[in-house]
Length: 224
Image (cartoon, rainbow, N blue to C red):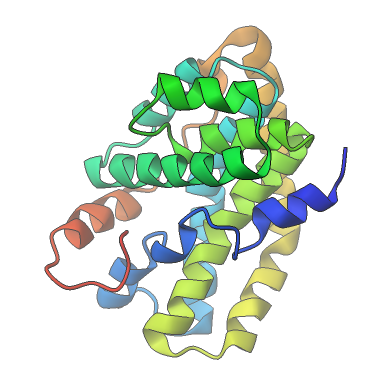
């Protein structure tokens, strides 16, 4: 295993399409729920412990070899918003395209054949981690980190927030990210023997509602 592969996968410059998505931050800014560094931190903390935990567990379970079709259905069940389901599949399709060029393997080819319109991004992420020689914890960390780094980067653009302040938010959340990643892997290991129903299903209703509102905008900076 090369741990450096995790740096490649988690790098914001990896061409997986994440730069075009705000993780709900654009809608939160428009609604006044994010107005600066302090409210960004609150938003990211909430996202980490809900969407981040769910994504981390799905990714870790995929990395451990749980059937991706089962996990994709579990991801669908945990994503009430049609807009978020669509965004998740688009991100999964783009991630898979980039990963097949970077770490080519038969498992990724089979996933592409099985999900021509895209599987949910965390499920793809877990299989990509496997292809890159990474472990379940690495997949969970990557998913959890993406859940907060995307909104932080988006708010720098949306509010002209000082990038130093946005990065400080991520640094302060690091101990919580550790705990979320550990919880995600623990749940994923249970899912290997007990099935996907034991995976976290933490709810974030404002993210879901905001995604539907955002999808109807005629002008927006981010795709989601």
